[in-house]
Picture 1: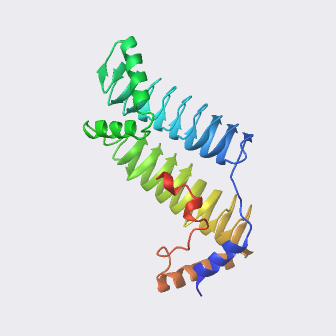
Picture 2: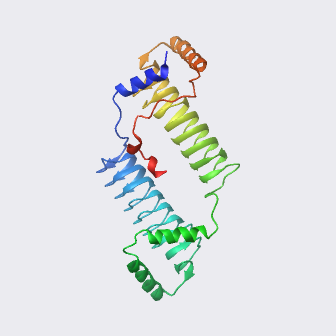
Picture 3: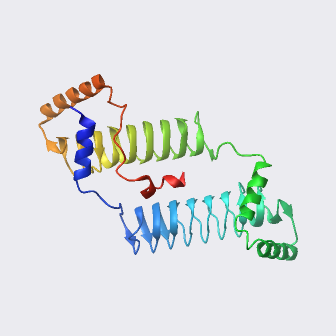
Length: 318
């Protein structure tokens, strides 16, 4: 039997959760959000207000077209900001205010086309200027390049390429590699991961342990090849399964245990292809299916196509 094909057929014929929202006000077109108000088309965000067109946002106000921005306000078209105010076209900045076209800088104010600065004020191309002259030069630079919207970004790229680059953003890590990693131990090739232990190839993880090839996961452990795993334990090849354990090839299952090839179940145990079994029957049939798939060379080797078309996903953000 082709179990993966049967699983795909089951998945394509069952109703699906359109968007995942916990608490929100006037933010109906946002996905994977909690405590969000007056936002539009943001994904993976919590505690944000009046934010538009963004992803991976936390505790922001009035930010637009931003990715990986946290605890910031009035920022536009920026990536990797933390605790910033009124920053536009900035990259990997922290504790900065009123900066534009600035990268890899910390605790800076009123900087334009700068990179790798610390505690600087009124700088252009990494050179200091008096405040009055700074304001005049900034006005001229913007007026001269109104017809060339990408020119200033190109200048920032040239400046970054001529400056030393930080290999890893993070701190308090032990035997860990990747980028944007904080307070991790024994984590290899991990990104946007905090307080993790013994992880391999994990992206956007928080307080996770002993997992491999997992994307977007919190408070989870002993998982392999999963996406959107919240409080998920000891599970393999699952998508968007929360507060569950001991799942194999499941999608959108919530508060479930010991399920295999199941789609959109809640509070279920010992199910295969959405059908209930006794504990003994389930364990015997599960073992038989896994052995058959291993003999066919499909277990952990082949995957069914994604439910969503590429153009309907956030793949372009990466």
